[in-house]
Image (cartoon, rainbow, N blue to C red; front, top):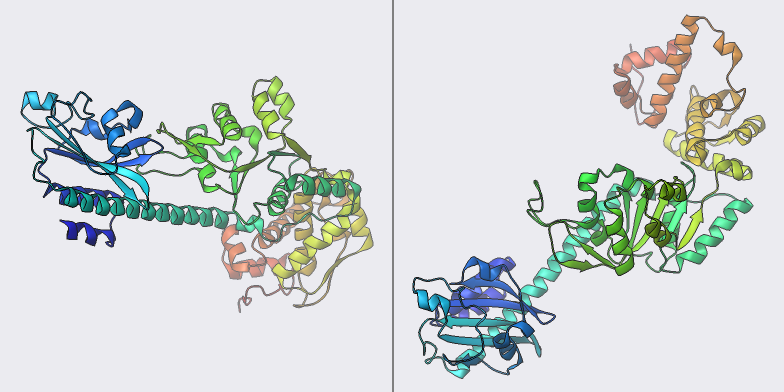
Length: 517
């Protein structure tokens, strides 16, 4: 029996199997009708495996202050055997399986062993028998060896469980980071305007703290870039930044997504799953579009912020988490509070240090820098030479209203770079002029060409086709095959259409050659 336990110490077993095999080996040599292996956590014993007990015995926990026999066992330096007439209640009275009605109601012999490892009590082994004197043949030396090996097995399993949880946590973090890597790479706040410099100063101030931060601003101003810069400049910068889009969370799954769930909590919950708070433990959780968070979830988020505790769906045990929360919204949250759509206490907790990202029209002097930055990115994607702007093109960009802000500017520059590069040799320098800009798409006053609006229907169709082809190519980084698939046509037909639309000698991209026909 001792050899079997020793072998299991080094075997690659799941925790449940390790506990069951330990108890099975012990019960082969200890003459008992029931046995239980329990783990000690903060003065509470949790059953890990049992033999001869009813299922109800495994479904509860055993605080030592409520069970005097267990308290005596945990406090003793060696095995404790209770006499049949002991006045202390047995924790398993009525829970021992068997046909003897009297014995089921009252256990006659009870033995308990505290399990220690490295001087710390880590659990307990308990044995119950119907008949008095069942344990008379067990020597103290044997019980001491049993306790030492069982304690080592319990600690080994606990260490292996911790290692598995650590690996699973790292895997979840890697998965979350991979999902957001396209956003994380290459993003930066660019500009020299006074408005942007004030924002950068506030970021530097709040980054060094642990305060929750609420980032506000219009769509497309770069709120996520601000969140990433706050995290990167913080003491948690080497830990994960986990992104959650609250607008994409249906109310039915929002709680599980944020706080996790246990197996069986709802239909489809086949195993335990950690939520985003647990994945972000030690790092930062970025809650984008926080104004869209379902009202039913807001009190639970408030509890997580106030107490650092979360509770998985279907579980009655809280989890402590160490997470810094950064939130962002383009909504007017004070107005949402007045309308009863957002909790005032949650708003004040999130806005411990608010950051407002200025709209692009409030920092027009930054537009030339931003435009050149986006043009450089387009050059790398398209494989062209240097891309520059004509003075008149920059003037038109600076005069636009930009309701979509920086994101919209990036799209306009990308389309302009694609238009200007058509028909040019690889590595040839490109100049973006006013004709390459589709500023009418951003609502600029007077930007729509009256001449184009007066074109005959046939020419309008041609203009529409040209626009559709160029936008498809832009979305796929100049890839003709991908653009053709999006447009629902063969690549050779797309080349023919491009020539017919006046897009002569299409630039080769991604190693593609124009069709011979």
